[in-house]
Image (cartoon, rainbow, N blue to C red; front, side):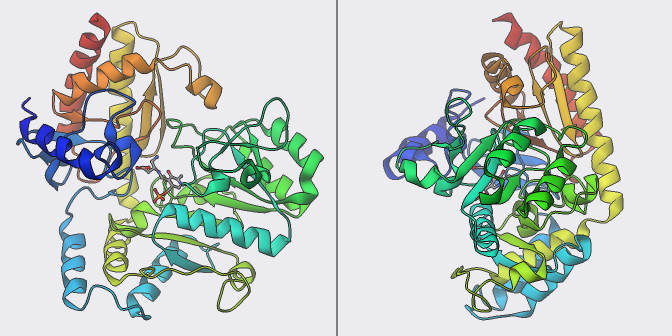
Length: 429
Ligand code: KE4
């Protein structure tokens, strides 16, 4: 594959943006090599500036459940743009999207739109602290909730109940109220609640983890979080920025029948435009300014184009869509597992609906410790071997792959063939 034009653009981009990108994962640091530049995207296919085409399993990190440039979404954006790109004032589109979300997720009695998943989780945490008058937040290793200082935290040493900053530029004081437990380890959560339960404002969790690769909640894990937060008067926040409208129309809360006090959304609800949202119990949301004392604001929140793109997307997501996505994603999961098996490579292919990924490891992957046993070097070689065969997986072994309604059996079959050849090549090194 020729990457001449991409290489020229990358050289230029590095003058202006750190590592030439606007989000770290796009720089391919985890897999090596340099990024290709997109000229256009349609359906399940990306075309780069050198004319190379790729079947896309990144799908804008899960946002594009309908694939790229879906006609209904493009039409909605065009029509909205013709009526103005931003009003800084209320408009009907906000109400229509809020109603569409609440209709699918009845536990979202009221919500506030923001512009990213980070803003959604940051605001939900602030609200939880205000509602409970408590300082501490409990999160999980391997869960990513955006880049708010106190959520960029990793487990402290030993059983220390405070977390350590997981980025430069975050004073230790800012993570001292963050508690970190291993995902799918209810006993660790119970221990933290025994120790600090009265100070815990909320537990925030990815109800299906998508940021350590795909890791499903162990049976009963989410219910345990629900029971513990109820018992100690803490709140339960589901970070469904990935899983909302992805693993089911009701998100993971509906899929696992565990009702959180608040939900954070993003990605799919914006149809590819910048949108986040946080919402849940009305008594909580009524504490948000200007109704209540919890301040939160945003110049472009509820942007008419983003609302239109999100509404057009959600209106396409009937129950039959999830059946279709299940068929395609399970076919991909099976093909990947069979290929690894035939080539004698230990592999776990975790999947929840149309989000999945492969871990090259013997052990079942249920938390960060097991996820980190995956052979990342093998994944990096596989990534590039697939890229040159026209298949784009996430440029990291610890991210989720996504199937969209634009993917077809033919895409899956072509991917399966490419995967087998690419894995063979990656192993031969
Ligand atoms: P944004 O601020 O990037 O819109 O959302 C943050 C966020 C919050 N919660 C969850 C569960 C998320 O997965 C994310 C963002 N996801 C990453 C991919 N794992 C976005 C890709 C990127 O960082 O470039």
